[in-house]
Image (cartoon, rainbow over all chains, first blue to last red; front, side):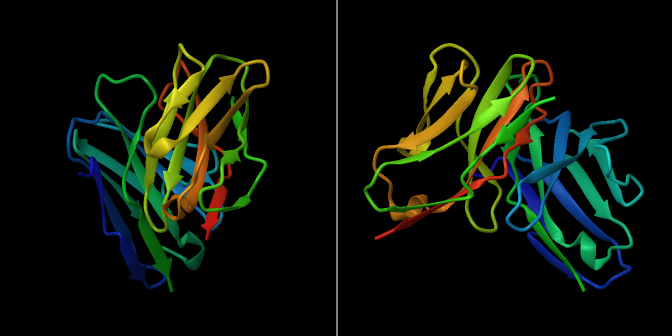
Length: 117
Length: 114
């Protein structure tokens, strides 16, 4: 079964609204989660590293005020796209690093496709 | 910093034929290497990984890959593909220090036809 669950899998919203995407670790505690963005026919771009109980670490070029990340518990991280615009339309994927695991293996969610009209 | 190059954006192949998907990486430090598969509108699933030890790594679904340090390559192979192998394949690398921070290649679309 799934190790990481994302919700919603698809969301359509109007320009200017905010959208929240949830990433849940189902099988283990996750002190660290990662958020990726995937453009059509492109690779995955790491947006930020979400750390439980502390502020997320954003990659260069990613607007922290635009993409709010909250990691309030060991099983849940949320990504909120604020004041969404059509250029924010993309496939967002989260991944989870298992607690006490340092082998580099990540477990990925099913992804959330955001379409901003 | 690391980088990953997947030279082939698309690889068409007939069912039951062998296939090789190429991956080259660049890094100034020791690395871990991974291959992931992505089916349409889904997340990524780990096929196999190289952490240390034997350079020939076997994964799920009959795939294997060989780590070649001198050529900085980690090519993915399967001796006989199936229609169900049609998907996007991503090679990824992380350094052994920040083990979970993956850098992905641009992906190779494997298209298997009858």
